[in-house]
Length: 220
Length: 220
DNA sequence: TAGATTGTTAATCGATTAACAATC
DNA sequence: TAGATTGTTAATCGATTAACAATC
Image (cartoon, rainbow over all chains, first blue to last red; front, side, top):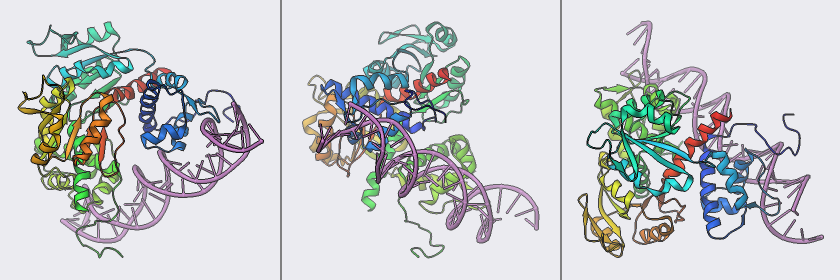
């Protein structure tokens, strides 16, 4: 009763969170296909390499609309901008980084962010030896300048790359400054209001997933 | 019928994969509690900070045995080694890294791995300017020495930190050398035999999860 | 046309939560 | 003891898969 038939949009049911991360994988795969000169793909073709069923691929995309062609499949060049639009990477995103330590500096040099339009435009630290320097073309500011720079640059997302003990304090300050998304590399859970989305990346934990499978095999 | 009552172990049903990653979070949280001098915690206390229900915490742990004390909860110092044993981090793990580029070097300097007993013992590259050097105390070898070093050091897990185009080839070679777990930082899906566990970390994809939530809020 | 493949509904599967006796 | 909390079973919820008419 909500939607009249063959109306193109379908803004019902909020998609499960898992759908969004699969969408990112579909996008990466589609970009890979285009680089290899492939013009179309199918739900089974797309799912195969990623380990998902064809039904799942179709269902995931159906949350957002009808993008395929019965009998043909999906046209890569057509689907890519659709997914970018859904994920919000159809535009550039200025990103802030807090913490210019070892890991932080490396991430500054990582070229992979640019691939989807992310650009680190400011680094914040409290170490006077680093403040004022330019690392990998990015200015290092004192953390106290956060609010000013965030406002000036229109920054909405940030990466936390500080020691675990400092992470919660930094996060609180980021939220107060109006940030809306936080990628946390500190190995600690940070508590934040519902309105702010957090993704945690704990490199030691990723490795633990591997050791579990190794010892499991050994145990039988 | 399988288990007689009050037998301490309970090696039935394989746990879902999601349980294992939560186990890592429980461990991290327990270590955090211990550092703060807390001796016991409860399933609800443990779940709260992580955003899981008390029932889920108890169920997850119950896959592996009975570790709690009715009326008391879980003793941190007691549960930590149990989880480490399950995950396999009750011992040290030598780790190989392939790719000594920008991101690779940073990961070499990252101290967080040591926290759970991971030690990068060898780096492999094909750039003659880097081979033979020692970075952050770790020897850089030619990729052709992989098999030799892996055997000598008893390495079972590796990180791939090479460009996307090279990742699949490197992965195949790692598998041939007998590796059992691979942490892949290259932004590409790699196809591997069932017997080898892969975890992929794509930093741009993590950021995409954030942009989705930001634009979603903006859209309503 | 016959073959391929979509979008979508219904059926299945699996994971989370609620509830509670047992225990400290 | 009363209060707290576990381990576990049954009930609920949600996500994945199967199936198929519609379409190219």
